[in-house]
Length: 293
Image 1 (cartoon, rainbow, N blue to C red):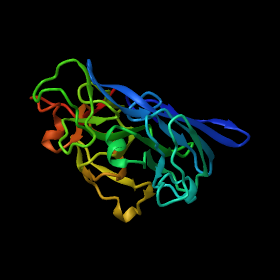
Image 2: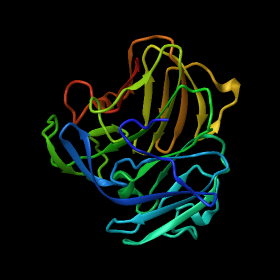
Image 3: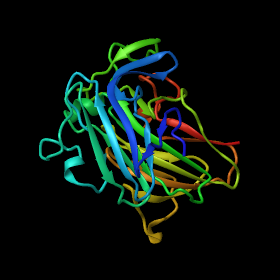
Image 4: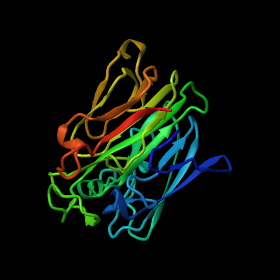
């Protein structure tokens, strides 16, 4: 499985427990060639690395807090005990103070599918600063040839004049409702990799959204069916052919595409402003391509 333009962690098995480490910290993220944003992420990236586990794993995830304020990690959609859910305030699950860490330990009881992890402290600010990532439960062997994960985010980047793309480093305004950059795995088109496949292969595209708005994701030249929604397998009767799916904030879909039409095919959010970079002309934002090799 690949997380284009981002890292993956598969954990280290010690005494039957799969161990991971995440550090919440300030991050300087390159979203376009020479254009950086100053946000918050995990392990040096926005979004954080994708965590990959297998069914029935016992996992322990140590989260270090190197931010100037308390934080937590919520395991979005996972069935677990409330003391490790990361919801804080209304739960016994604790917040993590600056300079401290917490070990989230739980057993994987959900079926194979895609989930996310993200902050649940001061969520308005911390989510819009970038604190999120993918959490995938994957069968060790399946029939998929190419397996990709894309996390959708959006940012209000300050100090960059509308319609301009000047190289530099810019802060984020997490309180704004007006966004000017829309990212897939922390990058904007064309500063990202395509999803590669071969003729006759089967492709899984995992989509998760942690932004503010909704994103109708559309593929050219192909139909797909939804394999799982929010990490839960859909019955066969619901696996109808389609070429667009809309993700609201917090939603997750796993799509299955049969690669039967060679070429280079756009895959993008269909909201017009979400296909631009800071309001400039030409394509940008949440756009990549399914490319046959």
